[in-house]
Image 1 (cartoon, one colour):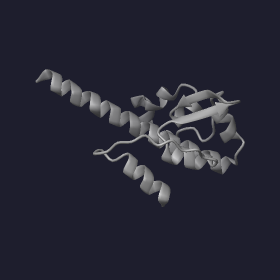
Image 2 (cartoon, rainbow, N blue to C red):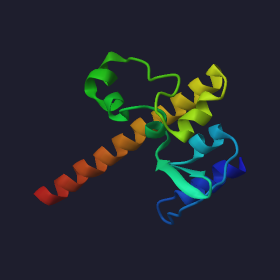
Image 3 (cartoon, rainbow, N blue to C red):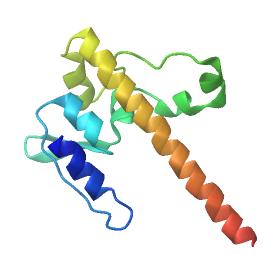
Length: 126
């Protein structure tokens, strides 16, 4: 509950803020983060949205043909990343949960960015 309130407040439009969280539970990291930063030996190893860190060619899951087919997003990681290897070490059920959350957030994020782009185009036309 505390995390949910913290992130809700941080993402409020009137006072947007950046929150850095150190998460030991991968589900927590995926659920409450827009981006994942993976450190290895004191250096940044990876930084991206969770879904691109988990699958190869994530943009294919945004293509209309995939969305219209109502096909399921992958239930286990396919990318060759540190974050992906951490998720692969979990049970199949945990992997599927993380993959579903990451996919849903990725689709939502891309819909929002496309909406902003469309609004920007309308402003330019006027």
